[in-house]
Length: 203
Image 1 (cartoon, rainbow, N blue to C red):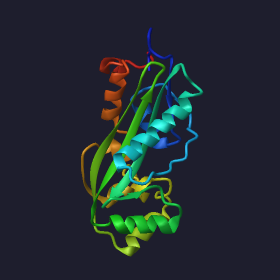
Image 2: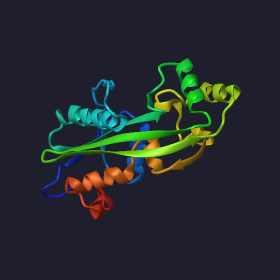
Image 3: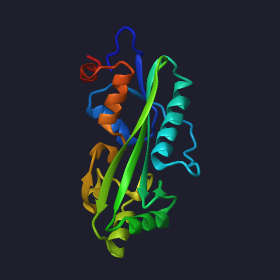
């Protein structure tokens, strides 16, 4: 991002997710990827939106502690079905279990986003409702066998073959991919990066 006087000289994405990095590259932003050193553990009794926002904030803090002249962006995505949080599957069988639960039902995808600079720290979340088509055991096994389920909250990727599992969405598509761009844009505005400056990147 083409920061000028009063803004950090470097933009950092605190995430190892290639999907989040791809979304920022599509905007033309120049940034560095620095994976955070954070355990993505859940706390009992904390509502899902606050869980995602808290973990995103911890990720931003983790990276900002080493790059205090930068603007750091972090995010955390969870899938919620009937009050059960579905994180990343631990193995192939867990991915099958998750997709079996999601089949034919509507779930929520919640992404917490945090933006950190030397002067400001802001965070928020986005929620999207996603409905799956009815899936039989063979279809679930075939999808999981393709390897796309692993390292994805809820065991699917809407930007890949997982798009064929989804019958409809209500809300932000990019949120389901892993980074709600509208919410991120509004948070950047709160840190002083106006919308028109978000368009004029590294020129």
